[in-house]
Length: 181
Image (tube, rainbow, N blue to C red; front, side):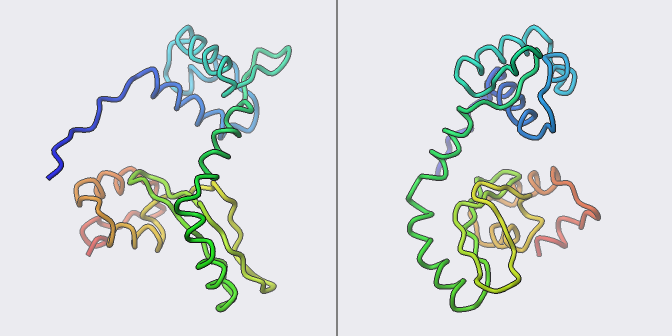
């Protein structure tokens, strides 16, 4: 039995990740004040984190505006993640066959046990109508049929599933016990 406890999160890393996520969803570059206010951070802490992220090219200062956006380094990380051949390369021929034989779009999905599923492989249908998804796109875990399959057949504990389930945004949230059974 694995008794290893999860590592205690490092606040600076959590804050940096929150900043990156916020910039990734923002429809415009954001100022230090915007970021600090949205995330409930101290502006000076926000500035120190932004300077470090800028040094690593994960954010960029928009020239002359004192506003920040995601930097080119995030593309490098995304390419490295999507280029990991283990699952996607092994899965791709099977997805291609499924799409070809049945006229469907087939997705390879990765779930890290958290709140999101990530598309890691795609085979598109050759029909006039098909679903489109981009490599690297994410959608809420557990709210889709795919998420329910992960819940039913994965190795995530019921307690962990309940935690992820409770954090999801539902239009009408079902009762967890009804949903899981």
